[in-house]
Image (cartoon, rainbow, N blue to C red; front, side, top):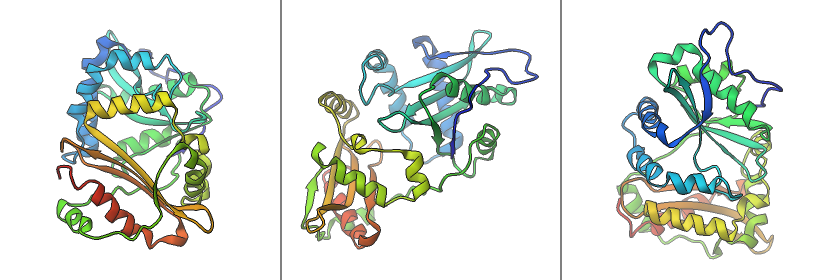
Length: 304
């Protein structure tokens, strides 16, 4: 879902008696934020593989360095940009946001969580409007919501969000992964991704998505580059979470164009699923099974 921010925003809904304090998160709020996270994730994801415990532990352990990172311009500057709603000294709601592209023209609402006792007091709407007013550089706001979560869908529609596209996340069983990794993929021009390849990946990104989505994402070649500081921070992040990121693309040498690309994060500990993003040029759909087989082989030394 996507929305353009209003020209002005209010932090108080008409008819509400008490006005909550809306502010950035502080270390003392972490217990309340953790409780809200747990409640929201249990409702949204149920028993699916969302490793919220490890995420919260890392958030607590690295809260100081994360806050320090927010003071330095870098790709991870908004790794934990959270604002909370406080009523009578109690945190009753939280919202996490982050810039979606390097130009920071499109921002994403990562999570909104409100305590069950205060959901009918407009806290969710106030948090959304607060962020739209606070982060003025955002031209467009976007988010993902489970279409079966009627309460969340209603909240976002009331605040001006409109459907942009439907996204389906697929999971692959360990047995199917074993079958895939036994195949020898036919990828003669598979190359690792570097900063010099950013224009090629950007062109493939544009070709593989609908025009309206491309307009909202508003990505540029810089979105596919990383600085030395970015790579250092990401390396530290992977070390802490015991993960590894593998990025590769398929080059069409005659056209000198990228026709397939994947970004794979493998878990070395087995405590969370491997996660992959895959893009294929519409004219080369035969690449899908080949790239799937290659990603399965990349993860063969990791736990299921």
